[in-house]
Image (cartoon, rainbow, N blue to C red; front, side):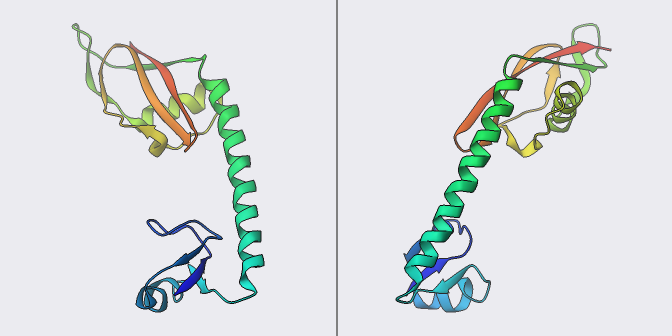
Length: 148
């Protein structure tokens, strides 16, 4: 059965795509959930409008992500934490701590889920953390963890 996706569906397609799926999947899952509508003869124009709006929104999101990345890349974010004599932290610096430091020191708001493969930082020193704000925009944050 051919359907037009009304929202992004993992493993199937993105909003505005005309895709062929199993009849049962369309009738029992996609259409009742509001994620798709059955494709008819005149639906191609509506699907093209959906794709255009998706592409415009994606371009706008990419531009804003690039602007934020250009502002954050040259900065070094300082995080103060309690530590022992050997430079080991009492506890750790988590993703939430990093996001709070970025917001406090630069004013930029990023989601903690945009941090890539972040393990808690347990030592004083300089660290790099990957950030993905958009599927096309990935960069490294420079952190400096200092003793309180």
